Image (cartoon, rainbow, N blue to C red):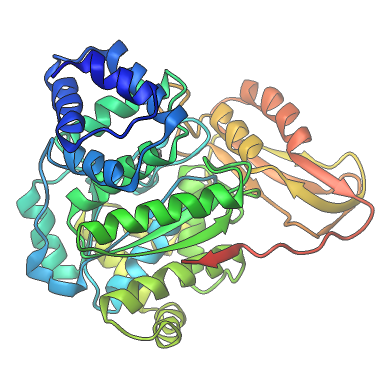
Length: 432
Ligand code: URA
């Protein structure tokens, strides 16, 4: 078998055999297939796509490239969630303690942020000394004991994806449904949960720019899950506007705490209740409406907040930040970004807000950049709100005043005002 022939076959849109897919992936991991050959194959897949069978084999080849976690001791109770990435998406911080407080088992590996999208591991580090790396023994022990553990992805979790994703990132081959679906699902399958709930984002701040692409990705991932005996559900949510008011690591942790204290009932709450209800409905095999009532109660009676404290403390984080959450809003430099006109807020472009927050220090332009935990943007208004000249649209947080001016230029483009009050868009587009 020669990699040249495999590339050439996909170039002519022909179906690759399981053996050919394994040959390409194993060769790439071992170094026998060169980066330029793998990028040529990835580009051919982007252009000519893959059949369902090829996507299953690609996922399997990636999954088998590294370690897998065995959660069988938790039976049907193990549950994971994944968001395809967005701006202001702090749902894991909220949803994980909600479902763990109800008895489901959350053994989760999360990623770091890159570009305008954030990552849960960076957010958790806002709880000073929070341990994001644990041995697999300690990881499982914690899940057994308190029902929840969230750590960074271990080095040997799907190494084929790590290598392939790095290549796709620099060769314009990220945006391909077979490649995205197999990349995400290989990591979810390796993490071991029986039940997986996906939050597929669609809009300016997401990978998927249209609803039809988001649906196609959801169906591809559900089929992979089924093929590997997992229970997968997907919700499609709007990411034209940042999710919630906070964008930036410690700011998002603050907002997550406020929600669990019962102080937030906006779109962020809606998405978190939808995700957690689906997770509980899968884990306990109960009706979604019954699951929803349980999740709403877990927030209103304080049990989810109590679980968050237990979780953060168990992983070495500073639990006092949960009681004194205003300490998470303490960047050394702050500035209000004011409106120059009046009208109704008709758009807050998620991608532009995400890039502006990254410019303040909240995100990474390159993989090895160091982030500023306290940097970010706190939006003061939502779509449809009335604005007068001089009103504060957002507050900017950074460690340097020099960073404000380029960020403000971008925010000027991110906020659109209209004369008429715009119609409210639903944040939850569909459940599949
Ligand atoms: N996230 C992933 O993990 N992989 C992709 O291909 C895209 C987003």
